[in-house]
Image 1: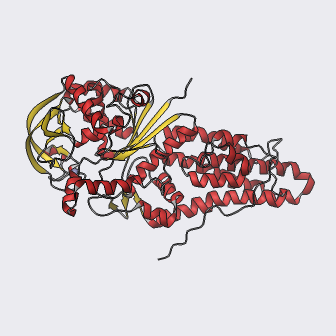
Image 2 (image 1 turned 90 degrees about the vertical axis):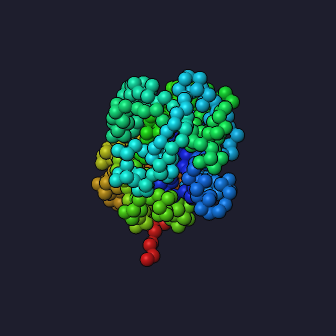
Image 3 (image 1 turned 30 degrees about the vertical axis):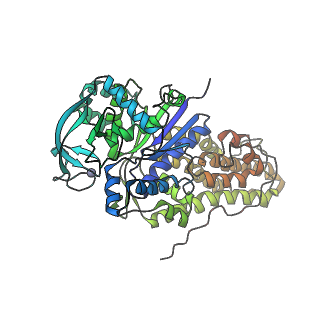
Length: 525
Ligand SMILES: [Zn+2]
C-alpha cells in the first residue's frame, strides 16, 4: 500500500513589504514537517507562495509611486528567495496575481458555491481594516481600533456579494469538535469552537472594482466587483493543485485522502477554521484535516509587523549567523502558545549553548575518544555496557517523541526531545569515564568498546533526528560520525534517515578525524 500523502502549506503573506522573521518562523515550521514526513516515507507536497491581490499591495504601490504589478513582483521575489538562505524544501510556490493555475481555480470555487445557493448580493455598511482586509463589528475593536493593527478602521458602504456562512454553523462545529478538522494547540481549538457556537453571520466576499482600483480577480459574471482577497487567497491551497482545470494533482493531494495541513498564525485562525472549510463544504469539497497555529514573535519587546516598520530581515540574520543558528532559535525557543521575544543576544546564547557547546561538543568528544583509544575505528557493541542504559533508552524513545510532538505542531517539544540525547550522552560520559577504562588496559577493553559504540550510535541517532530541523548541521554530524556509509545511504546528501542511522554498522570504515562542526559565535558590541 502506498504511504499516505502529506500536503503541507504556509499561509501566503501579503507582499506589501519584504519578508520578516515572523514569516520565517512559519515557513521553517512547515519545512520541518515536510522533511520529517519525507523521512518517514510519506509522499509529501509542500506549498508556499504570495498573496498578491490585496488592497494593501495597491496602497503600498501608491505610496511608493510604482505600478502594483512591479511592487508585487519585486517583493514576491524576496519571498521565493528565502529558499536558499533558510534551507527550505518547498515543492511549489504560487503567486496569486500571475500563476496561470490560480484564477481558473478561484472562479471554479466561486461558481461551485454559487451553484449551491450560497452567494447573494446585499448592501453592506461596516468598519473595514485594510491591514487585515476584513470587516470588524464594533464589539471586536479595542477602543475603536483594530486589535491586530491598532489603527482606526474605515467606514465602508457598498453593495457586495455575500456568502451564506450561517448555513454551516452546525457542520463546522461538528467537524472541529469531532477532530475531523484538528486545530492545534487545544486553546486555539476551543477559541474557534466558542466563536462558532456564538453564531456565524454571512460575510462579504467581493469588493467594488473601483475601491480595489481594478486590482484582483473579477467576480464571475459580475465585472463591477472583484473577488474578496481572502476568498482569493484561501483558494490558493487548491488552485495550486490545479483545481481549476480539474487536474490530477487536486484529486491526489486534496480530494483523495491525503492529510491536508495548514500552518498559520493566530491572527488568521478564523479565516482558516471557519470561512475556508465552509467554502469547501459549500463547493462539495473536503475541508483541511489539520490547522497548526503559531503565536507571534516580538522583537526586543515590540510587535513585529510589516506595517509598523519594525522588521527583522531573516536573510540578513542568516548571512550573519548561518541558517542552522536561525532555524534552531525559531524551533527551539518559540513556545507552542504565547508570544516569543527575539533578540540577537538570545539567538547567540542559544546557538553557543546548543550548537557549538551541545551538538558540536558531544560529537567532537565522542569521535575524539574513538580516535584516541581505537585509532578511529568504530567498535562493535557485543554486550550492553553498564552505565549506558539510560542513554540507550533515550535513543530508542526519541523518534517516537519527535513524531508525537510534530503531529501536534509542537516544535519546541520536538527539539527538546532531540536535545535530550546530548544531555543523556554527556551524563553517560561523566558516569562511565571512558578515559578511566582506557587506563585499565585489556581488562576493560570490551567495556570501553561497548561504551564507545553506544556513544557513537547516539551521535548517529542525533544526526537522523536532527535532519528535519537542521538539515545542514545534521549532514555534517553524519559525515563526522559515520563517514561514507551514512552519507551514501541517505535519500539525498542533505537527509539522514532513521533507517540509515541504524544500519550504519559498527566496526566498519574508520571515522574521519574530529573537526569542529559549529563555530562559537563571538558577539561584537
Ligand atoms: Zn487590522
